[in-house]
Length: 204
Image 1 (cartoon, helix red, strand yellow):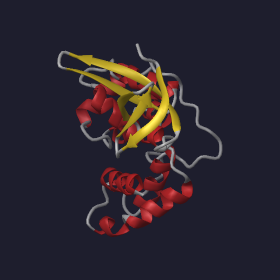
Image 2 (tube, one colour):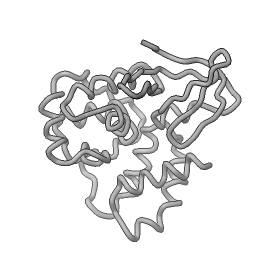
Image 3 (cartoon, rainbow, N blue to C red):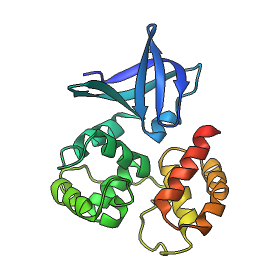
Image 4 (cartoon, one colour):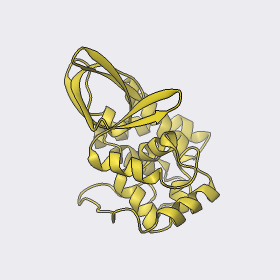
């Protein structure tokens, strides 16, 4: 198993990075929090998980061991492969994901592209009690799926919270949320707006 990579960041895209390790460019599919710590031309380190398929070898990169371990744990649920597991960590921080499973918050889980209501129920059923207890850090914004959120008009706070949970600063998160305000006139789907904000931050 390749547990981590350390090397010069040769390139960084919206969802992946290329890390030069001893003259070999290693392509890594990364979570947003991992990408936020990688800067082209500088040395970077990512925790990794290697997924082997008959026709491919894919490296997935994470900000730390906690993200990687959760990525591997959620794949023990039926129907959850590496792409959906990565999407879960793009929408939720590790602790907010654990919180959703522990509290049976299927609504939060269905915000992940590719997970429907039945899939969310199956995830809760199969993973409840198997994940570490969530440990929320004092001073952070509440998770996007936290209780008390209004069903309409609260998209901005949820998008900002989601971006902060994904590793962006509060200032950058607020700016990205403001940049997608016009799109909120056509949809109040937080997942759509969050993904749009992430794209804008990746291009910045």
